[in-house]
Amino acid sequence: MKIVVAHDYLTQRGGAERVTVELARTFPGAQVVTSMYVPDRTFPEFADLDVLSLGLERIPFFHGDPRRVLPVIGEMFRRHVVDADVLVCSSSGFAHQLKTTGAKVVYCHNPPRWLHQPQDYAMGLGRLERSVLWALRPRLLKLDREGAAGAALYLANSRNVANRIHSAYGRSSKVIHPPRGLQPEGDEESVEGLEPGFLLTVGRPRGYKRTDLLVRALAGMPDQTLVTVGNVAGELPSNVRRLTGVSDAQLRWLYHSAGALLACSREDFGLTPVEAFGFGLPVGATREGGYLETCLAGVTGVWLDVSSENSLRASIRALRAEDWDTDAIISHGARWAPSRFRAALQEAVAECTGEAGRRR
Image 1 (tube, rainbow, N blue to C red):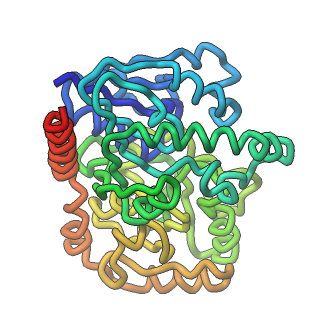
Image 2: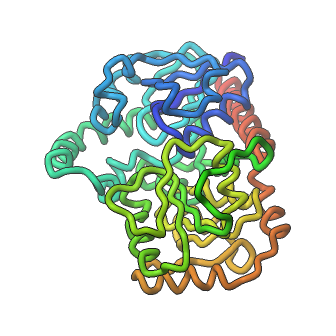
């Protein structure tokens, strides 16, 4: 079979992009279709794949922040027809609006947040941007649902997202957890100026990540050091270190050298805890979203109470006070090995194409 993989845009280093690499590896030789591709801003593994960009990166204003051109991205995908037996769309935005000559399978990280959780998405946007988004929302919502209706099969990255898919589109989906994106085996590169034992948080600059709350809480914990991977805005207290442009070798060193990972986001799935488990690193996570499906209080770490800065500080101190069983954490994390993801995905696609063949 000819299988093509699609992703919204390849302009950043996030969990969805790591999953897209694994999707392509699951089907060797598969082409990857995307709206824009900026190699130096996403994972280097894409350079080893056959990537077809629809060309938006030729306009520099666009690839600086794809949120500026959401309607343009959707229109480009809707006009493109993929010649394939199976099109596997990695989507939290527009890739599921692609058309294909074969069966379309959507691996959904989340229904588009700006349409279905606009209160989360709008965090950090200006008043004008929010007004434009609200004005366009009815039309974008209609096109989004039309794209979803064309899928033969929906796959959700978590039960949390499966519920959102049902709410957004009225359809059921099979849950296949993504693999941990970063493997513990591999090259490491130390980060200058950091002593092991620090607290670590990893995430893109979005309001629902709650990095601002985490920074405020750590400002009142001068005996602790927090390292944030990903751009966090504003002036930081002296015990918070901001890192951007971190390589995989440096990230491995950070996971190996940290005392604990803090995950305060309202995540659809949340890839960083399962990455941390592979290194035996305990995790403090909020008791919500995808973390409910991956974190096991008392084994992998504790639940963080984010109701206030004081309660968050108390949670962090409880996390640091325990002597965690590294082997138990690693054993728990083994269920998110890439081999399990690939096997489940291949089985789902085979079932989908077999059903399509019976209908023909």
